[in-house]
Image (cartoon, rainbow over all chains, first blue to last red; front, side):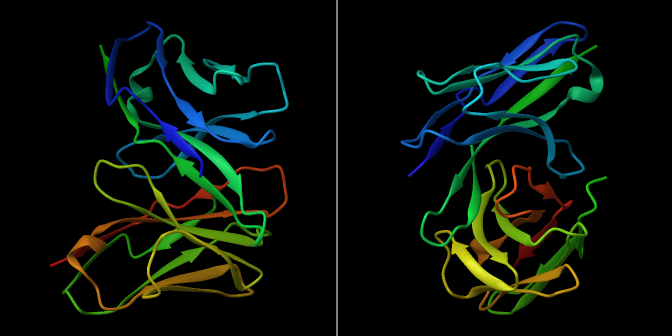
Length: 118
Length: 113
């Protein structure tokens, strides 16, 4: 079974600084997707960035980028120029596919609470 | 806005009762998944419905059941509520087999007393 581990329960950063959130996962599959989701106090999960395992190039979305190390099964999120609106819970997630029934499910880590200090 | 809406936003029920939570998926999405998120935890997969049939289930007992309708609406039903069922319930819609992400609703906060 796939597992996702986020070892940092809480992180804080000064506004405008850069912060990196860590995530490791375990899988025997060769093709899969990895995601970072943001969950603000409004509770809605918002997709931040997506990485396809077969792509060697690290995904980038504006101030957000990932460091995807497939061999090490590591998928960290870097937030540059942190803004107050970035404060939220961040979840790393792995998308697995049930080979028998075909269901696609997300396996989430425990989350990292990110605080932005003004 | 993700185009996925859930109702109600909050709900309080008594142990032993039954509850129905509702979700309206994004138009065109043929798949809906439900997740349970306990306080301070990551979401846990309950089950997924594809074209009105359950096509995958996580480690949840049969008293958790669901329905998916052709009009992109769906329901999560929980019978014989237990205190441990208190959680945020999230639905997510997506396209099966598509290389797309899941879009989440804002969740229903269920409290069982």
